[in-house]
Image (cartoon, rainbow, N blue to C red; front, top):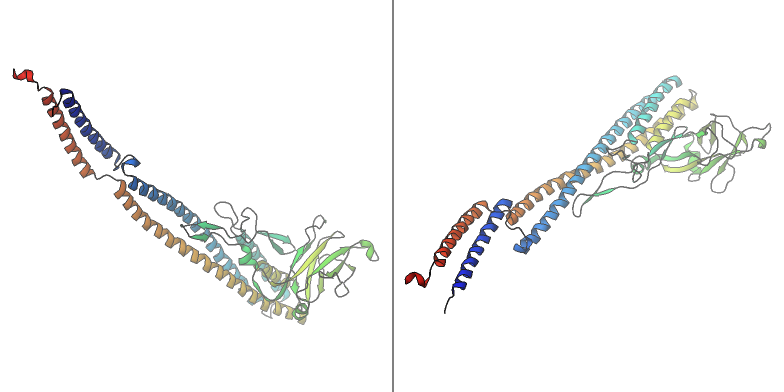
Length: 414
């Protein structure tokens, strides 16, 4: 086979370019620290690297979520501990108030401390997190969950939503609890009731109904689960004309115990079916106030009912018996509230443990992923430098050989 001069030149140049390209590729690997610069260099490894990077990014987001939820739940745990401290102090006062030797004036002093504790409790239940959202409002994070409804009663304005946050590929954790489940839906010691102003009342300033107390449990038990409402009638319904009210059953609007067109005096006790309550202010004709039977009693209602009862019950034998009954009922309701609180704290603690273990797992998996990623994409500098030296040597040899062959000619032998 004859080899022409042009073929010799092409072959030499091709070898030099091939070795030079290999050296340049190795130099680029050393400079970047990566085994390959293009996915096409190793499609299988490139696919695995992409997958690992996506998993690492996802875990970074999970870890940020874990930090955020941990901070929020730690705050909630602190608030629940504070609520527990208030409940314990109120319970101690309840036991002290049950002492039959205390006068009405003495009970009034202690009731004032209970009222201060009630305000403290309200502040705790309306705590905001670092993002400025109320932690016990459910999904309504920007709505204050517990508000003063007037007359010593409180309304819950949040909802029952529990936000879930993803902390793993298939793991979610509740980041907050609804105050309704923790502080509202507490089993009552005995059948109870809730009082509310009708939101359509027109009096300005609005009249308010107090939380009220059960004066005769047996009579109220016979009425339960019926509801009632107090409606204010036209002033002309009585003589001489004046503000008056009628008490009716909610189910059939029947007048209760003959309480029809009763003359109204602000702050005087209204009693029927074993319960007593007061309405303060000056209602407009047509204004109404609801009394809803319930087998549950909120923490705020329990404490508010204590304040109202201990301030109003006198030192007569009947009044002292009412005090004793209220103390016994309040202690049981406070114990029920404490049980609900402990259940809430245990749930928060379980979530915090889950967050901690999940965080540790993410950190361990990250170490493994980073190690695999390094094996797939990071260049072995010792091997690459040795290879570059060899390729440089080969390139120099090819260049020298080409120079020698390029100078060969038959004319040199003549």
